[in-house]
Figure 1 (cartoon, rainbow, N blue to C red):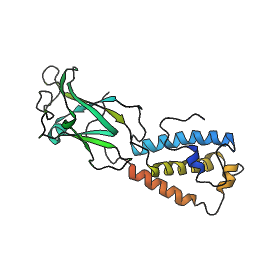
Figure 2 (spheres, rainbow, N blue to C red; figure 1 turned 180 degrees about the vertical axis):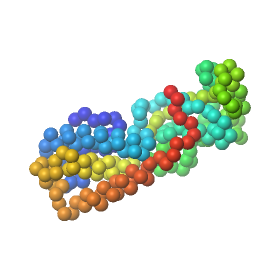
Figure 3 (tube, rainbow, N blue to C red; figure 1 turned 180 degrees about the horizontal axis):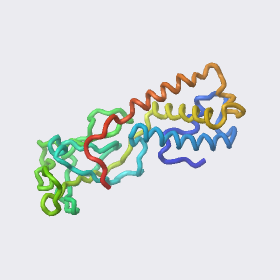
Figure 4 (cartoon, helix red, strand yellow; figure 1 turned 90 degrees about the vertical axis):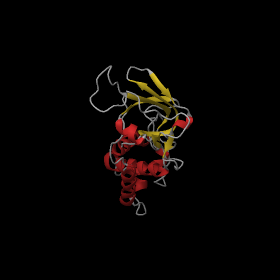
Length: 229
C-alpha cells in the first residue's frame, strides 16, 4: 500500500493499539487508515513546526541561511532540524565563496543528544585553526545596499530531519489516526471499530497522552535565521 515519505507511523502501528484486528483483514479499512496516517502526520508536523521527517530526503542536501549581526555576535546559527551536517560554506549574496570551514570550524548543538534527537543549531568556536570569520563587509548593521554592504549567507550541507522518528511520536500519531477513524469514518460496523469497542481501550486517556507528546515537541518560537532557498 502506498505510503507518504513524511508519515510518522504506519497502519501497523495503528492497529497495534487494537488487539483483535490485523492489517489486511479489511483492505478498505486499511486504505482509509493509510490516508489518515498521512493526514495526521502532516498535521503533527504543522502543529509542532518540526521537521521530524525531512522535506527533502537523502544525504548531502544543501540549504541556505542568512547571517545577520545576531548570528555574528552569538556565533550560533539556528538551522531547524538536521540528523547531521557535513559542510559549511560562507558566501556573499552574489555567490562568491568567502570561506569554507573544515570540520573543526563548527559544533553541532546540542552536544549531547538522544538517538532520535536532531541538531538544531551550529556554534562557530573562535579558538580553532580556521574560525568562522564574521568580520566580512557582508555582516554589517544598517539597511542592505547592494555593492556596499552585501549580506552574508551560509550554506549548510547535511541530512535534514530527525535521525529517527521518536517512539513517543509514532505512538501519538497512531493514536490520533485511530481516533480520527472512529470519529470520521466508522464508529461501529467494521472489524476495526468493533475491535476498538472494548472497555480496556481507554481512547480518551491515550488521546491526552498523544496531545501531551505533540505539545512537548512543539517549537515555541521562531528565532535565528530562516531558510532562504
